[in-house]
Image 1 (tube, rainbow, N blue to C red):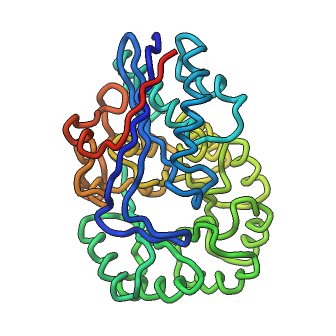
Image 2: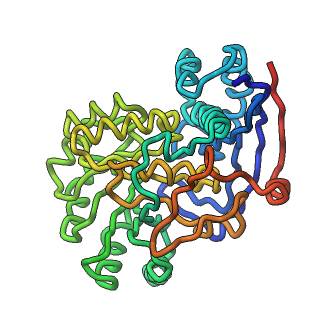
Image 3: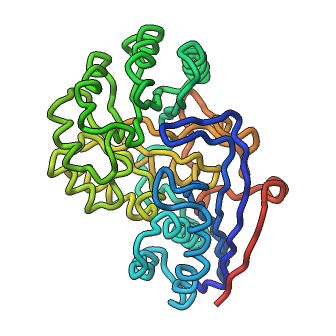
Amino acid sequence: MKLTGVELRRISMPLVAPFRTSFGTQTSRDILLVRVTTDAAEGWGECVAMTDPLYSSEYVDAAADVLRRFLVPAVLAAGPPAAHSVAGILAPFKGHRMAKAALEMAVLDAELRAEGRSFGRELGAVRDRVPCGVSVGIMDGVPELLDAVGGYLAEGYVRIKLKIEPGWDVEPVRAVRERFGDDLLLQVDANTAYTLGDARHLARLDPFDLLLIEQPLDEEDVLGHVELARRIRTPICLDESITSARDAAAAIRLGACQVVNIKPGRVGGYLEARRIHDVCAAHGIPVWCGGMLETGLGRAANVALAALPGFTLPGDTSASGRYYASDVTEPFVLDDGHLVVPTGPGLGLAPVPDRLAEVTTATEWLTG
């Protein structure tokens, strides 16, 4: 498969409602898409970096720059690239996992389309549909939160995740438990908003029988998570701290987590995500697929990943309508709390040309 060129495309996608976390509020997404063309097929990748370096050190402008100046030229110069070789080609360039993941995803999509194989088949999916959870942002008040959660449950979501931060944690969780009962699958996500000094306060969440608390401490504070795990009963799930299979193995060995959230963009791509899944499965650690407000392109790949056997908890693989009134692909629609795993070649879907044109803000074409 000869790579003939790479397109970097910026799109702007307004959210259906503001999404607030402990690190800020989003009202729209500035998204970088990567399209590769080959002599046999084209492929699409989606970069999950945010506009500002708040969730991680990466951000959209930096991802576009490193792709333009370093990553794309390296892949173009390597000759016909197989998807499994992309990570090795890009390894000399430190960091920038989200940019690398987008490029690898596009090459993998093109390769699979050319060979008539699906993402799900390539990654090792064992299910044809996956259960879906939804992430609920920080609200102005508890009544608004309860209305939002009630609406999502009415739509069929099988698990609720509440974003929390100091001052918005115990009482919102208590209110949701009291309103919707003990059978509700409920978890919380702190996005690194706490310190080990908050351990006693976080232990107040233990009586609510949560599935997990996600990334309570700073991403570099793995030992802090080890100590926190000794002080609270709620299982700790690591997100930002896990950037590779090696990180996952170390965190598990140290006792820093009982669950792992796998976000392919954060770890450098879907092939590394599969390796993390395999490491966790070997240690009996459940995993689930996190979301980064992806369009239908990233959502298709995430749903395929979430169909692997070790993904035993519902992920943040929400329907398209959770975030976007109109997606760039045909929308993913919830069916009895599940999304169907695409079975067509590659991602199994592609952008709708007219819709893609409507939201495009810039394009750039790169060749060898």
